[in-house]
Length: 236
Image 1 (tube, helix red, strand yellow):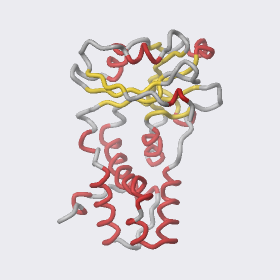
Image 2 (spheres, rainbow, N blue to C red):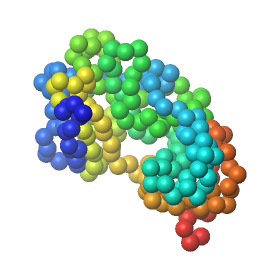
Image 3 (tube, rainbow, N blue to C red):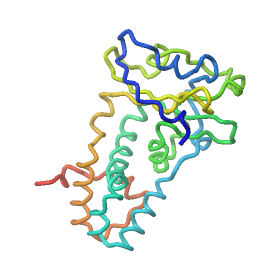
Image 4 (cartoon, rainbow, N blue to C red):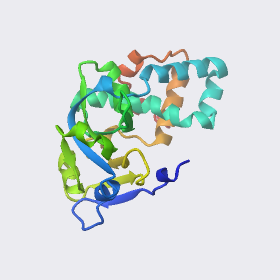
């Protein structure tokens, strides 16, 4: 692993006096950061929702339900079966709340640093053609983005995210040798709180769901049809 991917997570409380992680991520002009309110979805490389369906169906068929949901290596992806079903319902109700973070490295398509899950969800919400996103890139590509708003500090970043003082943010950034500066970010939001279920609760829910629906075949349509996950909580 390259050293520039080993920087620790930086936690920031909006409204406090801190070292500015956005300024740090720019590495004294080596990198730059822009904001685009309408990036075409088709211009961002990402994994697909159908890929998740194929993984689940093939694993269940090959190993059987008991082995499928008792295998530790499957836990993260199993939890995602529940999360994506919830997220699609939420996006349909209130739209996409948070901007993505994408990277430009000179290739034809952007890569995703934060927010790839949203792109997968949009496979079944086809009327959403664009997403808002911060674009992190190297100074050599700076002039390609002069038509966009350039971000040089966290105050600008917070303003775009439209969060209030006291909001907790997390940032990770690279070093000056990387192809881009800002690696990842996340922040707490009241708007997305209700569609964020802890991994262990998701795993319990999908296990209980599969016990009641052992013949399920996962598909984009399955994800698109909201499940009442409260019915599948343990001890229900």
